[in-house]
Length: 130
Image (tube, rainbow, N blue to C red; front, side, top):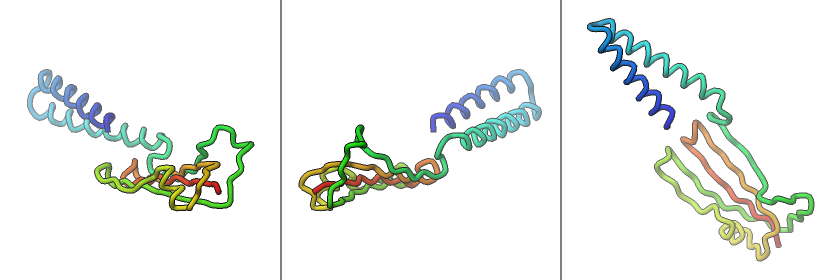
């Protein structure tokens, strides 16, 4: 979001300067070319950003996973977000333990899922224990 704002602001500065230097139709054509160029640069750069289109990652929340015992029960809690405007759900550890009827949590995992720069995203906490 900030990159788009920066590019748009920079393009308007260049266009404003070009209007001062050039007059008439040439300056308008120059502004259109510059805007197209910045949009193209943004799209190409966005392809190289990791997981900008699709993300599906599960990671542990434990630092020492060699000595981890998962336990017999598994509980999950999840939160969702749509269009960066609406979010709902409880992805906390307490909710995951409550959903799995776990009294002692021995290990936690987190599952992230995102589509199109976070247009839809979810975060799931997975608790293991007894």
